[in-house]
Image 1: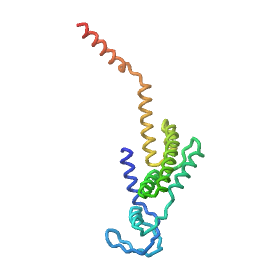
Image 2: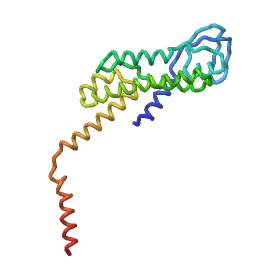
Image 3: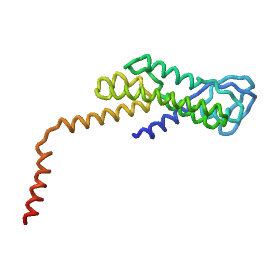
Image 4: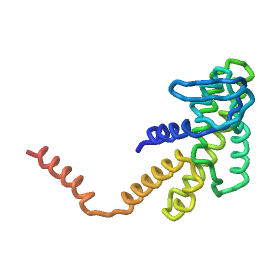
Length: 195
């Protein structure tokens, strides 16, 4: 399965996960979703529903600040040296979701924060990419590191590993037929030009 297809499937799962919210006012819904909540009540709701209610000012989502989460992840990655630090399966999905929400806001300060966030995201992505490339050379190293990778990184690791193996097989394979077909075609071309 391609990276984008896999990421979409995991993003759907991410939106179905429950998160804590605090209700700013009382609400009763009896349509597609049945919900009865009082002001200041706290409970878990599916992320997709919490986002809709937050957009309408009904709830405050009580989640982890992804800016802090990203900075912590970058700091841990730098401290880890050559080793890969563990990331949540949905790390990049949650960061992308946070950035998408932040881009919806129009305040100038928010735009500056998004730029900083994107720079930090690029830093961690490039740092981890360098490390992942090293692990892609060996099946044993892949097995060791796979539990510490996000969904997207697992697909990247497998793709890199497959490409490396294909390259090694191509270079290391010696087959006299590889060269005979090109020399035969040049001989037949020379014979045809003599006629």
